[in-house]
Image (tube, rainbow, N blue to C red):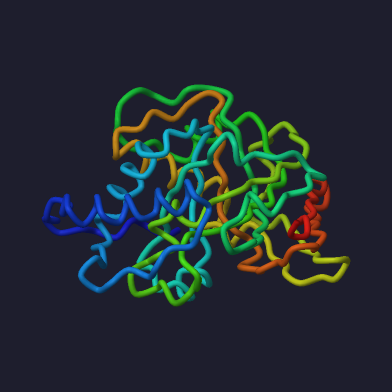
Length: 276
């Protein structure tokens, strides 16, 4: 299982850099427009990314329902030049039920589709900011459901932002989350080896299983929880945890019909509306 990168006496975040990046991202998100690539003098340090997240969140003021992990899969970390996974927020206004038609007004420039296990906690976790173990997290999980995460970001070229970790800076790439039907979570269920297939317009385009999510979606959820607890966030009853792509990246287009088959966990579908 991936572990957070050890930081040796990190310097405090540079307030002026954090503020400038956050203002640019917030402007792009609020206006739903792409923004210019960052100049080198604004390239962040890895340890400044969460400060940018927090400031953008404060500027936009959108209610949240949980947390996601970006780049849980080693394949994605390699593609985006990341030293470790990263967390982002799940926003209430980005949730949709299976079968949703997702309008073009929801997207700035990308419709990056990923299949993910979405876990919901039914109990609170122990108080404090110390780490919890997998067994503790398993006891707290109430339900599991299929998820189709749709990534988007404010910059015009996804992978060209790698030198400044653009996808990471912009809420770890998180935008919309389409949810399938809930089922009770069973600790004995082997989500790690539970397969899924991603279809676009009826054609199989990606597939994978839960091992892509830090080896096991429950381990991924534990990683998310411990990272957020270390930053002082309270995670507990009712919170959703989207545990990371098991299918890699697939960039869809307006008009595409998407479906992810999670086998015994069901299916999740969505259609991307054509531009008006």
